[in-house]
Image 1: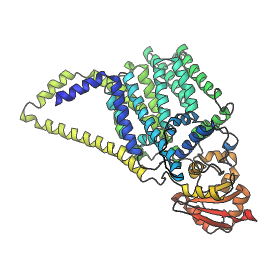
Image 2: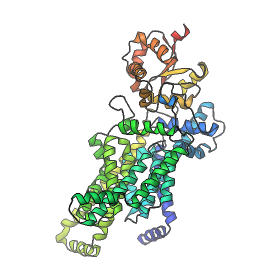
Image 3: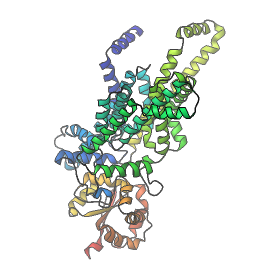
Length: 555
């Protein structure tokens, strides 16, 4: 039996394409299992599906009137349009016949979830492919270790572009390490088209230049003095590094110019990159949960399977620092950068995990090569050759059992618990479908609908694009549009406004004819306040939402 298994292993090992296929298939099946419940964990999946559908029906969406009180109204750039185009093949899968209207609205969301599983599996495959290219030991083991980190799997499973962004970044890393300039240029362009986090590409290139500089400085084997600082700038701005930097910069600029939204791309990305990603208004307004840091105990518990080998890797790196090559320095710096960034914004774990895995794999390859395995085999046989050494045998069994339990615990936590999160999600695929259907049938098109929480906008937009709404996707867009108006909206939402003034403010400030209130826990204060409000009459209610009509607009 053992020989049969060994023959299969040897056969697969010789067929690289078969190995890649198996890795992709395993990952795809796991993500299909995770995404099977008919829910979404993030509302943005509704938005991305709708944008892809609008592109499919009428081409690139140039204007965005659906959030009337945000900067999107006057300065809109679909910074995921490449991702939305890649969704089109999935949305073009034939729809089952004889579906009723409501079911046919849900069908594209299911196809987007299928796309999410595909891109997530492809991201896992990209990690494995890159590890193989780096010629590390045990690439499959290191790749599969990513499945132990629940928050990493969560980010990849979203019906959004994190998985696609990771694929592009890994491809960029390959071209950087191999110094393939055309590849860097093309990846930079495609990154801009696909994901708003494209400035990461320039950060990565800069860190590579820094890594090569540090490596060359250490090879000088001299003490730190003024001469070293001169050498630092000389090495950092070497011809190779300058070429890497300007090739990347030209690629990013080309992506901004060769763009259906040019010239709005420049002011938009200034706003998106500086004010949302870097400055971030989380201390002034409520932003998406992904921009907040995780609690340290939760982060350490979740990331423990990669942090333990990471600590060992850093210790080995420090012990043999003069022997380390540029690529090891590069992934050390890159992992430290993403570690610090993850402690600021939990969403960055989608980059921290694969980069740390790559660094761990590189260093452990050095460790494995440095070990005299023949000597260990001889010593191991000696330990178990007599009954006097039963202690070592029992200790080995105990330690092996602990490792198996550890891996099993995190496997269950990473995959099963994530599926359970989808199962328990308060956002079924038909979330707010009934309420939006009533609005479509009873409210004239293009009227403004006041809604409670900003994060229900994607559902409203998906099921009903014939009406306009207040804000969505990120509160920063409304805060920057009009801070006074944002404060009015916030006071209404948190139940701070006098109930007798609510209808008047909604009419005068927001010109809204109707108000939709989600029955989620986040909207509880607004719901309690609006029930006591005069001139707001309930006209619809189901298990998910309530709709009120502003009677002041009739007067």
